[in-house]
Image 1 (cartoon, rainbow, N blue to C red):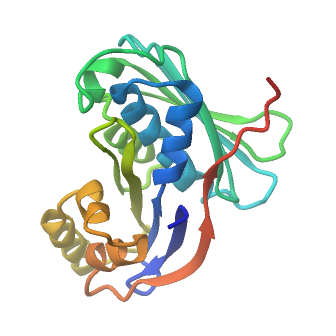
Image 2 (image 1 turned 90 degrees about the vertical axis):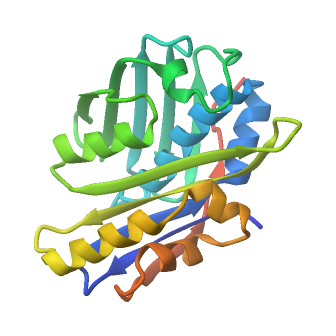
Length: 236
């Protein structure tokens, strides 16, 4: 199944959501950059986050860049995405040897920069400290501090025995300023009962089915569905 990104609203437009299956996208990045499992995991999460945040761009010409500069052995990562599901990225040190799930140790402390190029004279740059190095938590912190939007972000990468990517994906759920307490309570309940992105994808569920679980009782409506892929327009 080709990688897919969906977006939409729920609870009478009090909640907006983005979700994607990015398995092929992350696998292509792994092959392109010859990354070790822990680096594939870290870069894969950031690429998935880039796809989801790129979908927030309003115009086809807008570009979003996520840059991590960190003290961990990965040293740094850079991901650029657009509004059409295209994403590319690289990592400074692709062959870090740590357990595949030890992303926080590979990244460690540092700074996350979100750069939005929306056609103005200068791009908008928002910097926040990395709070855990787990990527999803760092993006959640960015939304809360820089954009003042309460958000739930989950990103994940699962491996086959040969270290190729079995599945990858993620979601971002955000509350609008007028969200009612009852809606917040229902969402918190659903999130508490949700396992993990990789487990749900491993069960064969689609991004749509994943959102049906996360937004149960909230009448989610998908407003857009589109393919996403790793696409680099750089020359050698």
